[in-house]
Length: 243
Image 1: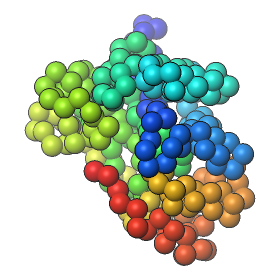
Image 2 (image 1 turned 90 degrees about the vertical axis):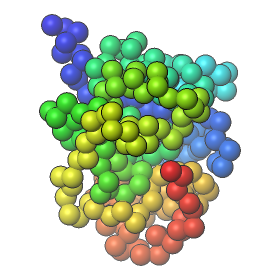
Image 3 (image 1 turned 120 degrees about the vertical axis):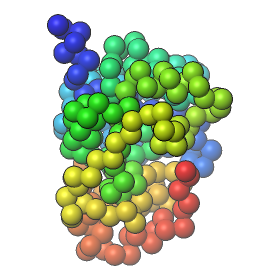
């Protein structure tokens, strides 16, 4: 019974590496008085137990520093496949005996823990293979994956580099995919980009922290900031989203 309960608890796999070419070692850049990845972890802790949050990274020496972050935040740590994110997630899900899991990337310090849990509950209730939402700003939403479905994707895929991986589920009729649409009207803003890929994204994130005057601003506080300071949206408007 203990293992069964664990399988149904919401666990989060944070996929993060330090190899970024567009913004070097961005996970360790300061956002306010925290490292970017720490900001994300502390945000997730608002709705999730630290024991259920897991940094998953590669076995490369450069990524071992992330273990210190995990230890400081008292969360779990896993090292796996370097380039194949799907295999890394599967390895972690297998090690921690997870039937389903939430995935967030280290690029998204403003990921919303409230919606992460809601999407997870919806995913489990409907028994989906993959679930996300399309109504929140980029960088705010997360993904939920069934481990058995992930194993099937890994066996059938041909590509090794799977950094952009949601398409493996969404483009195939073999998988039961869900879209969570129960988003509050005030949170629906598809035009906002709150992920961190390039310096302009990082600059915007810094501005948000400064203008909200909060170490960990809520989604409401972030969106109110854009209403009060409309110019913010232009800071990273030229950054192209990778799909």
